[in-house]
Image 1 (cartoon, rainbow, N blue to C red):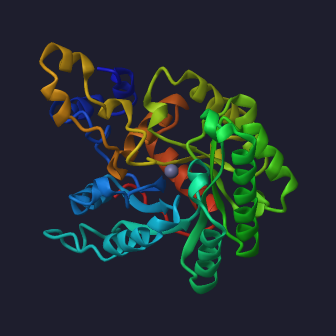
Image 2: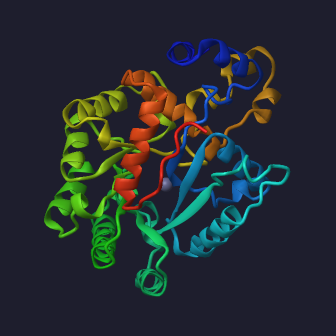
Image 3: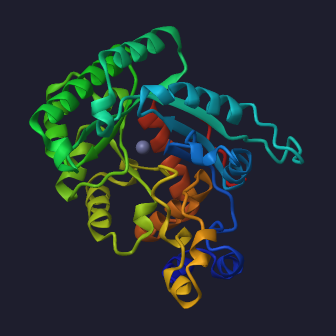
Length: 338
Ligand SMILES: [Zn+2]
């Protein structure tokens, strides 16, 4: 199994038992309170069974999640999803069993990858939303992305920069944290952040699904950002990522990390279809295997970090909770294992 080493860090017997039936089962028996700081749980892939997924997330200890914006046309879908989650009544469970129901929060933002689609009208919609509502938790996801040749074109990158700065301005005027999306553009992003009045030490903020190197990781933390860690870290081959996180933690301590699923993306490695089995049987098998990440898989990120940094699950869960509250500038009470 790809995560045999993980099993040794947690309760081995319980883990083996759980894994025997479902490789995606929680990697420990306890239930730790968790915050999923970055999700796209409003995506269409969850329409069919979101109620089941809400229940499983709650069961896995996830008490808060952030629905993160990327295109204006989906802003309404986020509010609807938030309402569905926050009014969910957990059929069949007593009030005591659901003492901490899952709570959803909305961040509005225009994502750099979709830069061609954004208009000044969309920025206005965000400004109006921020002026009219007081329940927008953050601005995001925003940032720079030069992953493809198209995104790297000078005029495209210039538009990305304009929209990034315009949204940083909103964060400053509304005193909200930002959720950063940065891919192959860490130096450019740092340059903008250093010149902008946005102060992450004061307003919080997360470099979501962090993918930079060691120096970049430390540079974002030095500016006051937390590094968002996804299921990517569960892959033992994610050496660059693990080195970057380790370097940041060595210098700044565990307070620089938060966790996220980024669902439906970033499926933890232990939840991915077993390709060797697929080859041994037939291709049909792969279609029935899960390929969609969900908030209920967040414990795998906790368990991997617990092993990587040699810290007890309970202590790490509490630390990450505190970090998330500081990054999002909220005051949510932590309940120990429940
Ligand atoms: Zn995202």
